[in-house]
Amino acid sequence: MCPQLVVRAFIEADSDEAPMLIFSRNEIIWRSIRAEVKEFVLEGCIILEWEQEHPSWYNDRLPNKLPEDMLTGRVLKDLEKRNKEKRARDRSKATTKHLRGGLITAAMASVFEDDDEDGDEGDEGK
Picture (cartoon, rainbow, N blue to C red):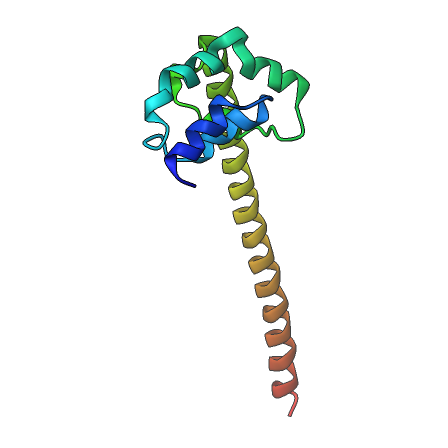
C-alpha cells in the first residue's frame, strides 16, 4: 500500500480499528502524520480501554508494536511486566520440554538396557 493511502486511511478512519492498522506498516511510511498518530494513541489512554474492552481486532501484541513515546507510563509498566512474565513462561516451557526430553531419553535408554540384558542372557544360555 502506498504511503498516501496509509496516511489517508488513518486520517479518514471512522473507527479505532482502522487507525491502528498503521502500525502494521513501516513508520517511515507514516512519518508525516506521526504527531497525529501519537495524539490519537495517547488520547485518553486508549490502549488501556482496548485492553479492557478487547475489540475483535485487538490482540495483546498490538501495544508492543507502538513506539514507546506513544505509550503512557502505566501502559509501559504493564507491558514490561507482561513481557517479563512471558519470558519466564517461555523459559519454564523450554526447561520443561528439556526435562521431558531428558526423561524420555532416559526411559528409552532404560528400555534398551533391559533389551540388551535380556539379549545377553539368551546368548549366555547357548
